[in-house]
Length: 263
Image 1 (tube, rainbow, N blue to C red):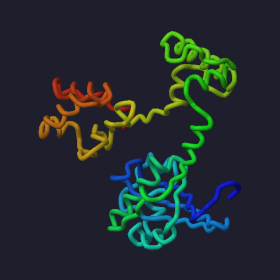
Image 2: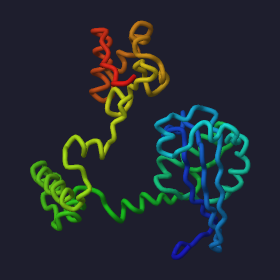
Image 3: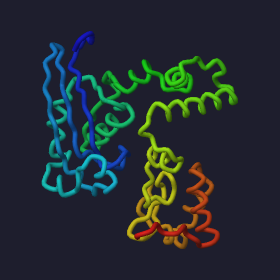
Image 4: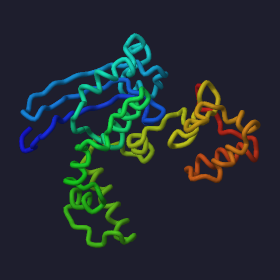
């Protein structure tokens, strides 16, 4: 690799999974390129049966469904082979420090193998990107408006800078939607099955369910009667206000939000 001196192999890899939680979710696809110190490359790709259901919203992203992997080997079947490919190598990926590395380490832990990621050098390509191309307000103002942000971290100056950036973005990108609602949907597509903005509460088979933690998949109406203390914990916890308001309304008034159309 030009300018990068390799004293040991470097494995660049990417993972597709059933979700974003290293503890709860599982790897479906693992692709890796092993770069030797002399620059030679060896690539591998494993398609794996995660042994748990692949949610439809996840399939919509990576196009891999349960049917596609039902006859594939599991991670446990391929663990020794994958471990050998990564043996004695430094690690690299895009956003790998936050996702791919923890996910891979959890999979090895489940089969009783110590991947030892903490002892390996990491190169997260996203971190290079963010260090060299800052994405803070000052950088955005300079990029879009061509001026320095002299009043950075003052609320009035930051507000003016933000509005000026938005105006410049709308002028620069003529394919952006021209209504607030459409632009909101473009930036953060809303899943109609989510009862709150971030999907902590989700409609499933016509029932409002918990979509996180140890109660994931359980019906809110059942918890109202069987485990009200859990719901009180949510109301008093560090959750988004829309989540707390829905749960509070259920607890105090026995009222759930209206179902989305079509379910």
